[in-house]
Length: 129
Length: 416
Image 1 (spheres, rainbow over the protein chains, first blue to last red):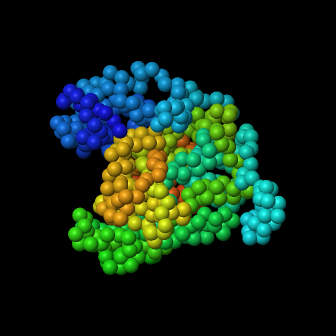
Image 2 (cartoon, rainbow over the protein chains, first blue to last red):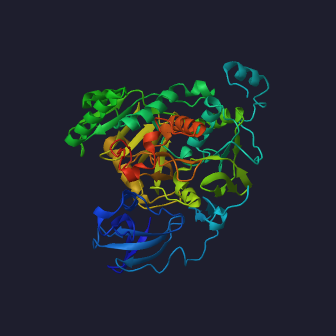
Image 3 (cartoon, each protein chain N blue to C red):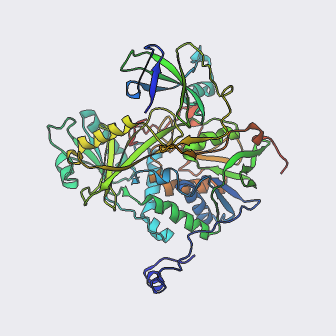
């Protein structure tokens, strides 16, 4: 259960008042008629879906009914910041402290590894077979 | 592999059941395989099993970062049905249902497949129209679906509240008699044991950390136990598929959400069948142990944590109590979550990718368990031949650019 700070109401409210609305900062192609099928398909269907830092849009539907953005870690569920529409996040995957420990906190307070190690671009480099 | 039979049971009883063979070996990774399957859940193990059994490819490794069948295979609500609307999906799920029917014999392992039927309830006029449309489509595809009235529903499932005074009165339902439930862990273990006996290496606690790609062709994977080579790699990693795709340098149209389920304390037999309702949004069946197995909707946010929020559970139980008021004082025993990889059209992706030799089988979202044998079978055929099996072909990742979507949001039991 999240306790979410609405940047418009300026107070913490319970998750039930809110509704998640998908990835934030998506830009609709300015002229949809002129984009290719690939670009349009990418815009409609392909999302970031990261394990880690994610910027997402939420709506305070049982409160002020305004949309705003949250930066959240999808592995630990920790909410790192909330900010208004039109603003940019201050915490991003690039500048956040690299979380070597890719795990989640379990209900009893322990630490559980749930997935792959940090995505390391070096691992994809070509090596002679 | 020792075969299980009544005779073997008697034989082992003589030695106090102390000498049963292990289900599978725990091998050290070889340097090179013909095919690598990434992900040792039900679908991955089924793929390996059919590769070895039907297509003669036995030099296969299944790479699993945790333990076999420990992800969504261990976390689902075990419902098996095939009443999907569109021809492509109906064929895929019905192919699976056909395999389910002989699976215990085929694997020599009791997967406890019980064809107790599934009811999909309708609570509004539009629900009824949707049910009728889906039943008609099912029958054209040779699926044994029928429309039933509230009175017939009461005969099938007496515990259901069909009164007119209910908040969401039941107006009818679709009824697939050949649907049912199976023992989820046994499915993974049976496929694993079968695959192992045919020579497949099941590598547990082995985590893929990257792909070896040269000139657009995959030739192996990096793991925490060293590099392993293969020119055909099939990824069957459910919620973690997007993470793997990112390692290979492309994106998938998937979103990974938490999906929660829960079981009650064990009760005496009360439910005959599987009851699902899209409108009040919940589904329930009773396990052989007696507990009610309950599920409903995903948590709307992205999450890799295998847990969700409490309000979602509350909504789930509201739906169950709406359908079965007598369950209002049943106590819940356990609750858990899995990571489901939902696709925009609620259908899976079985596809080649832009990297040659790298195949993905993912996007099963909230309803993959029922497809375990069928998914494994057609995916194995595709990996063995290098061409997608005709049943799998429509589920290509290209459909998100061509627009040939297979919209199964109506037939999916979980809204997303």
